[in-house]
Length: 166
Image (cartoon, rainbow, N blue to C red; front, side, top):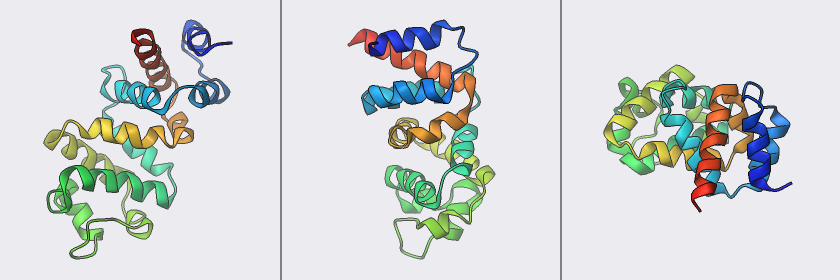
């Protein structure tokens, strides 16, 4: 079965139930840029929670390396000085002085709620952060499944749209 057939089957099932197996099958067969575009579409959708809430959930389900990697995406996009003030200064409090990176130990000191605030404020400063975060999570597709049904269906539909335009 081809990729478009897989997407049509999953989306055509009413989209109410996207199993982990269905999503894994698609994620393993779709190019990572297409997966990222689908995830970015879900992050931006009016039918899903706000991007900050979804990334906060992903952060809570991530290991320390993944948490630090995601936060370092924000630091790279905004610069350490600007990012340090986000979320009421949450990033600045955990970062070492003069550092431009967050370690897994430092990342683990943040709560998903703090990360939600950081992401929401980062997005206001730089709307392109949504794409950077989607690209990051496309490299960690196992985490995407933790977003739940509606977000997965939208991500899959956006992937199908993108592939249909190619």
